[in-house]
Amino acid sequence: MTRLLTFGAFDLLHYGHMRLLERIAARGGHLLVGLAGDDLIAAKGRPPFYPYAVRREMLLHTRYVDEVVLHDGAIDGTGRVKLVAAKIALVREMAVDEVVMGDDWRGEYDFLESVCRVTYLERTPGISTSLIRQSL
Ligand code: CTP
Image (cartoon, rainbow, N blue to C red; front, side):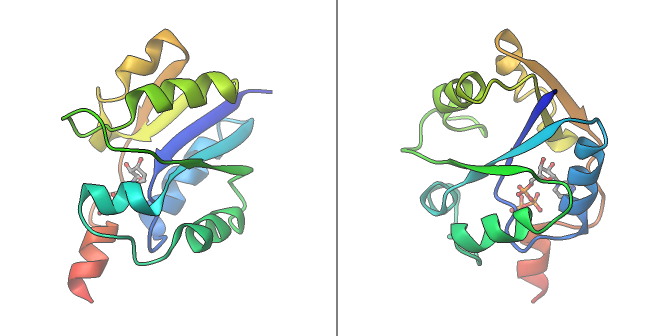
């Protein structure tokens, strides 16, 4: 069975997230989410609205996600993608065949091509966690 992995914060789970997860799951296989830990999100800007345990619970309540694994650690690198070594280690450890991300990340996960396939799917326009937080 194909093992699929996507990374993200998935805070204030919204229809953009759901549409991405639906399309990843439709590829068939076991879908893992490398869910950013609270400290990692806080280090990138501001803490999440929902803590890790709640974000994990909500993902597992969707019909798309099979498994959630913690993705956390001390911030490294200067680019938008953090914890590069941890991402490579997770792909290896979880025997991942393909990493799938929204295309706002296009190119930024290409470093994983040495360990698995990397695919970008179209991001849903007009919705994001940041937008919800600002609007509220
Ligand atoms: N995503 C998407 N469509 C959206 C929002 C997010 O396909 N409208 C995808 C992203 O491309 C990413 C995944 O969902 O692959 C997780 O994104 P995340 O950063 O957790 O959500 P955002 O809503 O983009 O959060 P933020 O506003 O904090 O960047």
